[in-house]
Length: 475
Image 1 (cartoon, rainbow, N blue to C red):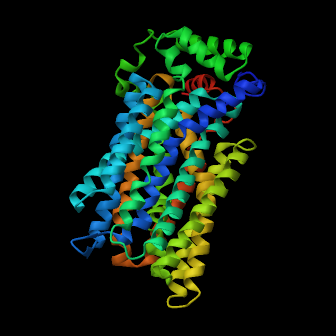
Image 2: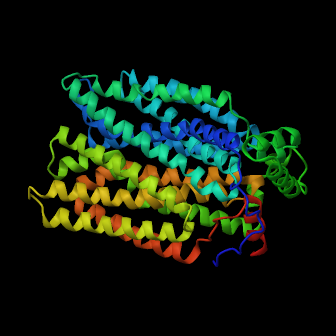
């Protein structure tokens, strides 16, 4: 697909915000992205908690490890799909308040689980909150942001995700070093996630609803008031007029209640939806979460002892955060498409090298350090380019009337793919070894590069309404 033409969005978008509006938009970004922090912590903490888990004094088998890890991912798949629909019907802010409560209750439930069955159940519930937040936070930020700053602001959520993962890795290592012989050490690792859930809940109480959602539902005065809090007056009025004119063909308040599935029968909508599905699958099939979930085990298999592997996983978290800072800066300079292509090439080559050196240096004392270096390189490309661009694209490419639904359905596919990776990885390693497993990821990565090269449109610098008009004209 060729890249969309330049929109007619105001060149001042996002560039003339007075200081109070900038500060308020920063507050909106920080508080709402605690949902991303929880996403990151709850997906990252399992890497360090898993080796310590014991029930009836027995360690988990590879199958049980896969079930414990993937139970959250099944919940996230359900939560992302249901969350998208609820966000369209009840609002982005309202859903984030509900999700904060679920995060808190489920985190405490995981920490006190008396059996594997209860742990799997509570992690499934926790996954519902993770999946809902993975859709709702980027949606909320995309609809609150000026066009010129949308890329940087939406990807602040990715920064919070990787910060949450780094926090999880650090907390894991600290708790394990302080209480090395405590049978319940993993429970404290899981319990810490309840703290940011409280911050998210009380933070969302003071933030407004998405102005685009309000206007689409006929609540024009509230929508304009929300815009005026994050734009200067004339810019807010101009953007309000554009959103209102775009929503005019739809009956106020009824758009989210139309048959969302019937919208996918429209050729241009279906084409964009399939691109979104493809981007979602590519992001997961890089194998990133094999490193996030099983990073400690990977480093142990390479030759590190348990405590060294926990500390090594912190290095993975640090590089993820630093790379995301670079990615946010780059999104203000270059397009989504070249960033995603560069990131995929980097991750694919890294996967190939992990496979090669795991085989060539088997038994060598250098192997654990080489594997750690390659996982750091992989994460630099993944978290600096692939992940932030993926979540940003999914938040901006879909039509307004089904944005939550379509994003939720794409995220459903993303999380189901994530589930397959999380569930199968320990069994693939057990059956095939590290080298062959990473060669499989390398082969899939080649397919992802080809897909992005041939199919992905460019979206940088356009308002959401201009993007939708442009996609519609190119049917």
